[in-house]
Amino acid sequence: MAKQKPACPICKATEADSYAPFCSKRCADIDLGRWFGGNYQLPGQEMAEPEAIAKARTDEPE
Image 1 (cartoon, rainbow, N blue to C red):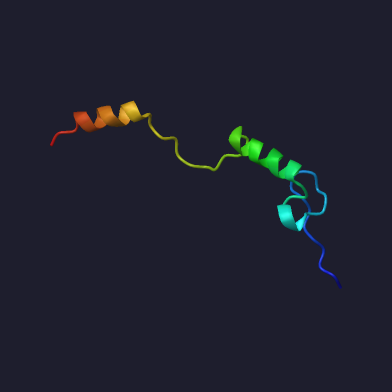
Image 2 (image 1 turned 90 degrees about the vertical axis):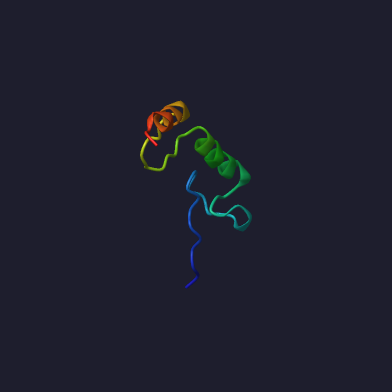
């Protein structure tokens, strides 16, 4: 029994070896655009602004 290739996460077509896990450059570019646009986010804590960090450091007793 032949192993079936996974589906492209963007359009669900069969993935192409040269663009794995995508089926084409177009789908790979769509995914990259989603990352750049902030559509995908990893969970984590919000970070303080750099100014707030600098102020907190200057307010600390030595």
